Image: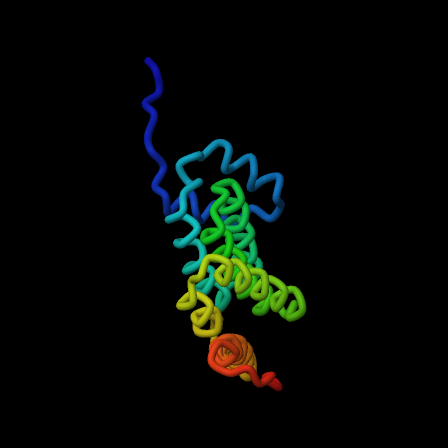
Length: 161
């Protein structure tokens, strides 16, 4: 008798994805489970990263790296911006501040190129945990960039930041 094929729940697949610690393992996994290569999976992973950083920074980082990998396969700027933002959040929780800032900056630039201002603002608000200094510094940086852009449209005076 042939074995019956059963569909593995998406939640189970995502949990397994969080345990994969190398890019090659993630690539093989996603090749086997093509149904995960979707924009909504990137969105789910980004939300899950925010939750997981409080429990396991390594699992959060694995999920964030999976989100970036999926977004690259999708070849969509918005999905990649979201994945990079998730990875920035995971890196910050792991204590790699320099890499976190770089990933948030890349995310910001992608959102900026798409003209998605609400997402730029939310980079600061979705940083997990509300760590002292991080949220306010991101918000200040983003606000200054947008304020500078808006003021330069209405005045010819140079802006000093």
